[in-house]
Image (tube, rainbow, N blue to C red; front, side, top):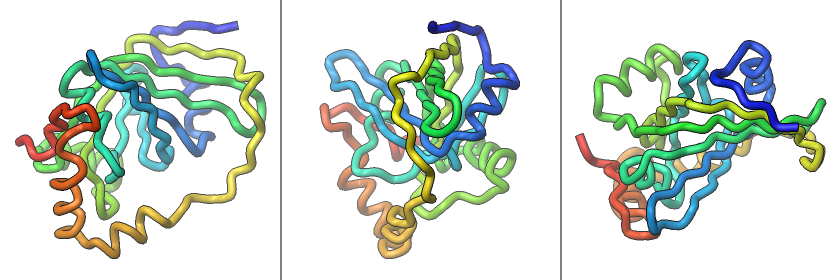
Amino acid sequence: MAKQFSSIDDRLRDFIARQHIFFTASAAARSRVNVSPRETLCLRIISPNTAIYLDRTGSGNETSAHMKADGRMTIMLCAMEGPPMILRLYGHGRIIHRSSLEYSELLHEHYDGNAPLGARQIVWLDIDLVQTSCGFGVPLFGYEGERQSLDNWANTKGQDGIEEYWREKNVLSMDGLATGLFDD
């Protein structure tokens, strides 16, 4: 039932565009495996073998630590409405820091120059394998909308409060790996 592809074609790009949530999975040697849900509003497929997403502040910064230590990452999307399917994008990622020219260029080119308050970095994934599977076991769910909680939290904190939070909670992973959040 699983099918493998070397890149994302138009059919798979269309599938990605219809989803409302995706998951990232990453790990490094001797670290816990991290799986995080993310809103697809921040995901962009910029070429048949490249995905990026605007990473927003979270309780930790595990993906960044894992990219710095190892680089392996998988993005998974699954249909929760309509025909069943699971799509996995396997590859190696890297972090693009907010202070970099590349971040500014990607933000301008793929996000109309707008980053929500609390955007930490952009995660870049070079995709080396694309795999679909049936998704028959994925339950059906109806989309109700995006939560406003993260935006409300960020607005309450303000930029200075968010940066203080990053220094307290996002500089090291739960396993003590450096995230590189303030690296230049």
